[in-house]
Length: 223
Image 1 (tube, helix red, strand yellow):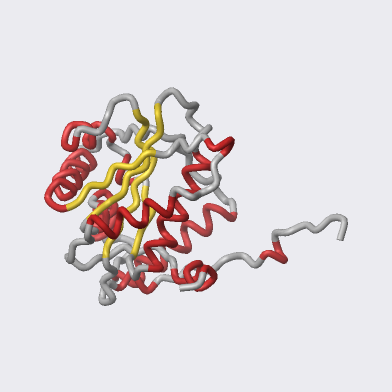
Image 2: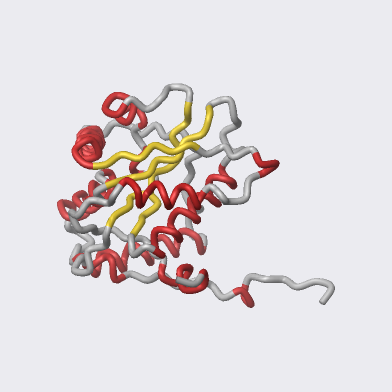
């Protein structure tokens, strides 16, 4: 697949087939993904890949804490979008489209809660890639580099026919990851990427978000 085609094919997949993803396939993705640009070649990223029953157990524990209304404690900078901003509106528009496709009414709390829990269970993906950084680094310092390697992972997965979803729900309870899977204490757990074979029958997978065209957000100087 050419790069431009991969860029347009990549989208967030929120429903997966149960088929496992071979370890060798994810190894190949990571081997190429680490060619991402990195400030002063610092390469701050580290990976933990979890699959199968262990990932299911992590998801169950995440949901248990969510239902108990335990306050999330992510190890990355956490913020919301300003109210009445275009950024918040885009988020709301996406939620409306997802809920419409999934048949979730605005006042159906049970279905809305179930949808939220799905993210904390990695959308049922057979595997998840977690990206970590050493705690000796500043909170925001490695994030640009992490974003670059994250994009590479998703594009390389799309090239192989795999689906991904970048999601911070999966790292909102880092203590779960440490207790269930033994994630190291000296690393910050920054983001999770659900990965697997897309379920073509899952309604939410039909979402294809638009993008603001560059001519509306670009200022040219000296041309």
